[in-house]
Image: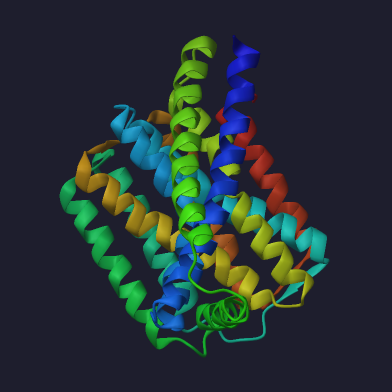
Length: 321
């Protein structure tokens, strides 16, 4: 049974990530066909597309009364986005160079959002409705910033996304296949998330470990794969701004909108693993991201250090030292 549920977990994560790709691409095309502003679509899709797996798994977790998975998934994904995604991207690309000025607002905004999340989690070891409302409010501030920041790091990411969508839409008209793609991808999103959570609950019982441990590790890595793919592709094209902007957008989206929506449905408890292990590593990861942004370069040896710290985090999570 153990091997079966491990197989189900990884298969479910693969379905979740792939169906998320199809869903966001179909949404982009339909939105453009119906005349929605390409920039507005870009603003929402840049972060929403890569964070969709986290959002769906968090909602399904609540419906299964496994609320402890939510905070574990969010915190684990944000750690993986910085240490694993940026680390592997820097190793593959040899060096990530940042050309635009991200010091004035991008980095402080990410730091403020992350430290606010850490404070909310650590204050009473629960995300309640008031804290969720504050998180949602922070997201709308972030959304307003995106709208005003066409020339900044995230704005650059959005503009490139808009251009990609414009190229796609010239070859497409509204048809039944787009609608079917949207419907079937939404269905498989649900199936992928449903069986991801079921497998986590069953593996937790079989292995005798908390569900939050699996959420902090396996689910976090699986749902961070879209960010990894986007960042590697951007870095290979010498677009370090987009590679880091992708992680910036995703982490703020996870820690504000997703945690806000989930916490408004039900209070979200915080496990010991999140409180004592994950939060310190999230703090360290964010500081590393902050100072890397200040230096404007992330070399491959620094990327290796990021990945090494992530391995240390996983080892500590499973009590290997």
